[in-house]
Image (cartoon, rainbow, N blue to C red; front, side, top):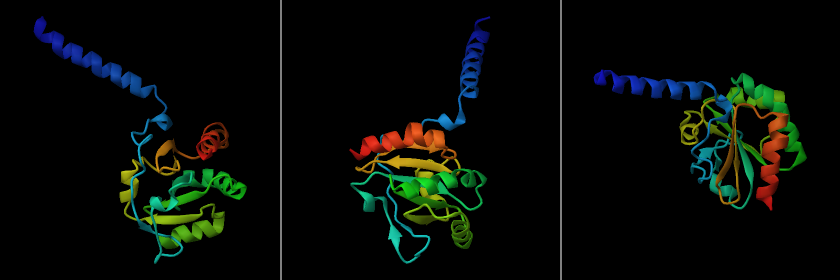
Amino acid sequence: MNRFLLPLGIFIVLVAFLAIGLNRDPREVPSPLVGKPAPAFELPQLHRTEAKFAPKDLQGKVWLLNVWASWCVSCRQEHPILVELAKSGLVPIYGLNYKDQRADALKWLRQFGDPYALSIVDAEGRVGIDYGVYGVPETYVIDKAGVIRYKQIGPVTQDALEKTILPLVKELQK
């Protein structure tokens, strides 16, 4: 009887973890990077490949890093919201073009509008891995000290923008 108790106990614990995991919203997966410095990188810009960009260039500013790709269906959903946000001038948005073809990305921005102060190219996805990108789109709020303060998994919605992202940005800009 005792030899069955350990496997039964392990089975019950695994079922409990599975049940908890299945009841969570996948968009609310906590990021281990929130509260930690944004990973450093230096990548070429999308529009000017000879120019580089690094997060350290924005030290002292609050900004958004939006991970996007021309092949991403959900990116089209959030794009009009980002375009309007960029027009408002409330916070600069920098794009991380993820695992995409440069020509496709440029065409996509010409077609749908370019909300980004600039976009950088992560053709192999290495920076995306450093940031813990699950899939595109994802958006990060980065504070003046270069610390990630929030991660939006999936498209930015008007609701998320108004209730979470913009209040946080305004608080960080003080």
